[in-house]
Image: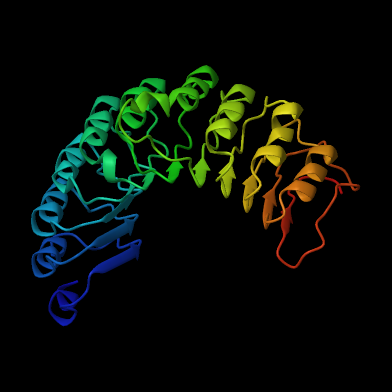
Length: 290
């Protein structure tokens, strides 16, 4: 990092997986790269609050930030992220060791939410339906990709109500557009009501949908995916227990652009399950007799 601080003067984007041994030299790098627009790191246990302060103090033009699997993540990180108001479009704070508080996350979205197009808050386990209504619903205006996986406090009723009222909640302001990518996987309380509301709000534009683990979702609700997501490219319905050959047949016939369907744990699928004859489609089975 010391070498990069002097040998890469024009660098505007940095993406690193597992920079475990970097500590104090983060600050040196940020000071020498005030033009940085994207800082994307995963698994950096020594990245702490002082590093966060240095990042936003020196790199005021940041548009993309990923702080994924950061051991020292806390509410204080979000306080510094507020300084990026007006320019931040991509934010990934997923898989922290300890979840940030719901109050802190809502406070952050009040400031940076209007410009975000991508948001990932996976495994911030303290987030509830209240976060959807007081955070995303009120303050998101340009989101196209949303990841809220592994949030055990979300309820089927709450998520359904959020998507059903998201557009009208904008009032006189321009509402958030329908989503292109949505990941609500491993939220085991979510079911048919949530899926119906999601498809009503974003079905016309969804290209990527992940509802892995929605075990009680009905066959009828799953069938509506094929009817309402004509532009779908990738679908994960793993462990959706009512997924069967008939639902798959509808997907193959109606979703002409689909390239990948993941069906881990869908034990009602049989050897007669329809498959699209295409070099682009991947139908992924695990633990199913076919």
